[in-house]
Length: 306
Image (cartoon, rainbow, N blue to C red):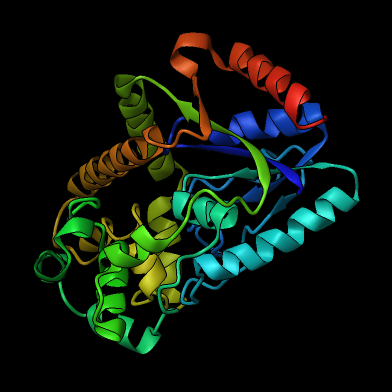
């Protein structure tokens, strides 16, 4: 069974920087596990590392889809498996990096036996407000509704889709799935920081995105015909700016909405990842990036190279 390295964590914790420095030290190549970085033309709002920031480290599964195309966990597994084999064939270490735990979990433990996506049904569901959809979910699957945020439209729709296709709650499929059988032998790290530091980093990041041209990036997506695309229209950082471009609120109000929603998203990520016993927590607030990196390298040298 192949050994791989997992670097995950909430948004704005510094996963990208750590992973690039790590790849340089252990001769690794990076596979992105980010549900938004797969899309072209969405660079600033997804905090996609530039070619310069990648420091000549090969990155995979970035810029492979148009903003109106669908990218599923199943496709992620298929592509990630392929790249892992290629990387290992070169004698290098595959490093899977990202905050989309759904993708990482699927890669490590496989998918549940729930039915595959029905995009005709999903498009119909996307017409309704998140509030309406969540109310439906509470009625048919209280167990799953308690596990996700009421504004997590993507997961709400997936749960409703499964119920409408099978007549069985999505939570039933999750219970039936085994998370004990690993598809890969891996060593995983959960990059963390103290809550206040993450919040400060999020605020700084959002203002930096605006300065870099996030508004112009969204305008470009709209000009290219992607305003109503399911993906781009639901991405944090883009959807909050639409009311500003439609002259329904000020830029400052939209910026504050991005900050608020990003913090909520990070909070959900932290809650999810905290429960994962297979991940080694690395607190950058306590240790600092360089000290933490040295600790990660030592752990990997003991386990991955054996």
